[in-house]
Length: 347
Image 1 (tube, rainbow, N blue to C red):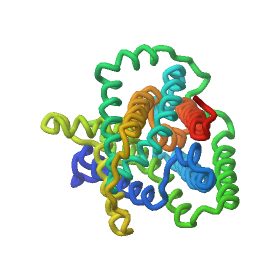
Image 2 (image 1 turned 135 degrees about the vertical axis):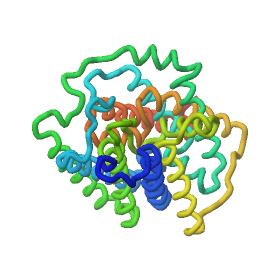
Image 3 (image 1 turned 90 degrees about the horizontal axis):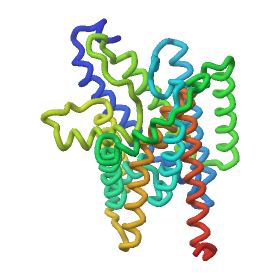
Image 4 (image 1 turned 60 degrees about the horizontal axis):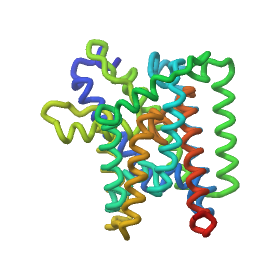
């Protein structure tokens, strides 16, 4: 839209890359400060679950409310996007979400959290993220793509692609999520700064949707509509690093670069940069298995805890909601099993 108004703007791809870099940096800083991670909310230590859940749900509530407002003013346009189509690959989403949920528990962090940690010197997290990107790319376009194709072929035609199509669903969802978030904040009392950072994170997906679907979209050179995510952006970034002379960087690569840069600067200013690595071969194997599960699962589910969870659910898309429920279910189940093993109740 802006390109039709101003001739001096850079080309659409470069503009989206720079915008992705900017909102990625915002996400990186906010996530580093707040330790933002869905895994902590569903399978973290008992003392941290409530506060982590309050911050994460604050982000989700803000994302849904902000998207509803942006849609009302015509600032977002997701017509035809996979998150709002009625033809839903239920089997792939459920299996992928469960796999991702188990994987994030094995690695003690979802991909967004591990990306942030990797930027602060955590070599475990960086190793997992790199392996995740390779496996995700293999599932999208490589040796594992037949699995994705086979599972994705089993679709269910829903009456609607987004719950926003139901009369009154949007205001009810917004009010309900804001009320639950406020209740959790009041009950578990996370640090006020963490709540503010969670709210800022909730705005990031909507900024991404608005930029790539309307504000920085060029009718003469349409680009993919996307938002804050880590599965596809990490695969795009990996591909760009390997073949940058043939593959231009776009919004997703900019977003990943921004997250890494923002998290690094935040940790540096807060004195939280520290080298960390694996402690044993067994730990390496566990983290590696989790990375593989998240790589395959993120692609099958159509996104991670941020891509499907925040960006997708902000649209109230049926497929995104199903993916988030599946991820949470997998995480809870894996957390219970690992808890039983740690207490000697599971052989």
